[in-house]
Length: 182
Image (cartoon, rainbow, N blue to C red; front, top):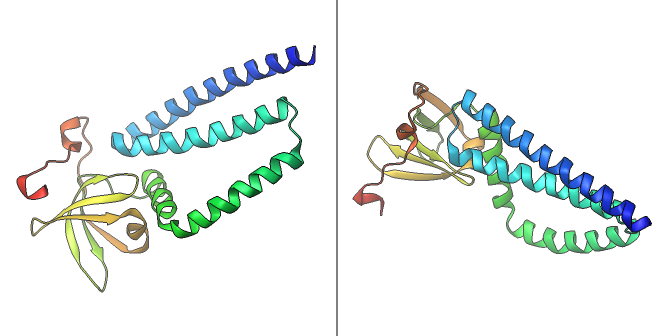
């Protein structure tokens, strides 16, 4: 009898997760069209939101099926200790993903904008070609293709020289490769 109730709760949770994923995807899609955000940047946000939804759903399933919290916390702390060592060694990956999410939602730069990165060591001026989960791709005024980590974009001053007009044409968002790019 108890197992039947757990199966019903699990089925309800699965339906709720599917609805939440559908609504989240719809909200992100609407937000990205309003702000004219590129498809690849949208995918990164999808993946991050799915990760958190599945993490919460997994936690809810553990509660439904009666896992003991002491055992869960012991296993979770062991996993986090191992991951903590790995993340400490790879902190830049997390900072780049976080920076990419911040650039997606709040930063005024967009693909096609002409910007200048203000830094004492280097001075890049050019057009943004793409913004991915980890890097911003830029073609400088000198014709060089520059790849800059998104975490660096958040740390440096950015001057927007010319904003690209928002269009629905998907061709505007494609990165054009030339022989010098390969």
